[in-house]
Figure 1 (cartoon, helix red, strand yellow):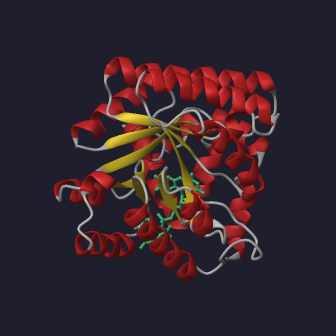
Figure 2 (figure 1 turned 30 degrees about the vertical axis):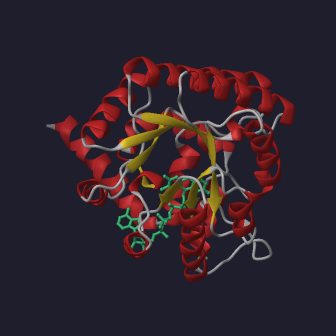
Length: 308
Ligand SMILES: Cc1cc2nc3c(=O)[nH]c(=O)nc-3n(C[C@H](O)[C@H](O)[C@H](O)COP(=O)(O)OP(=O)(O)OC[C@H]3O[C@@H](n4cnc5c(N)ncnc54)[C@H](O)[C@@H]3O)c2cc1C
């Protein structure tokens, strides 16, 4: 990993810069990556995607939560999103981060909040994905996920192909809906692959294992080479389109999303929304510094539209 990438990853974990970004956000062109800062903007964007035949998974952004009160406020905001999906009949579900609802406060507080969310979503027949965060949170996240899956079936989680433990996690959780990703966090060589080629190979391996043996697979990548190879594998093994979907992040590779829908595949877009966009945004820049171009384009467009 380059020094620049490393610096960007460290910056993504700064709570102070997160505070500053909250104030500056609307002035920057963050709307290329963030599907709105409130529910009204979010809903407009969901309709736009649903009309293109694309489903959505909604992330009510929030990180750096260290107090019980903040965790419970975040939980209430997530319940509001579930209501919105249900009442408006949107084609979507939610993605949550356990640190947002108390994992850094206390495991039992987090489990309580997660249970509230999953139970509420279950009553409305809505699926909840539990996103996977950095390695320091993995063991406690799996403990909570295991408690929840003993009671609920509307839950899935994420496997990060960069991690050595990923293959064993996939094999142990073949009955769960799993999203396979490369991994957005910088991890050390004793626990994770460091070379892009190794991560790509593991991504392919894990996706194939879950497609053949597992429950539903969400193939979450913008990498056209990987997508091409997976499609070849799916056709060769006659895997039904009802057993998988392609997932991409909001604002990325829209043409590729449309091309996959056109070919009859399920596509789901991850929609981050809210004011706490900083950590999410910085990880996107760190993993692909060219993404800054999108932001600059949007910011300059905004400036021009205002000036004229
Ligand atoms: C839906 C979704 C959910 C996720 N959830 C999690 C999670 O819970 N936990 C976690 O750790 N990570 C998560 N991630 C992030 C993930 O781990 C990766 O960091 C991120 O997806 C970047 O990897 P990539 O597979 O898209 O391809 P990269 O390795 O970034 O890119 C590979 C190649 O794809 C092409 N490419 C990529 N992006 C673009 C673009 N914008 N335009 C044109 N070409 C492009 C380029 O040719 C590039 O070389 C998620 C990602 C997605 C899509």
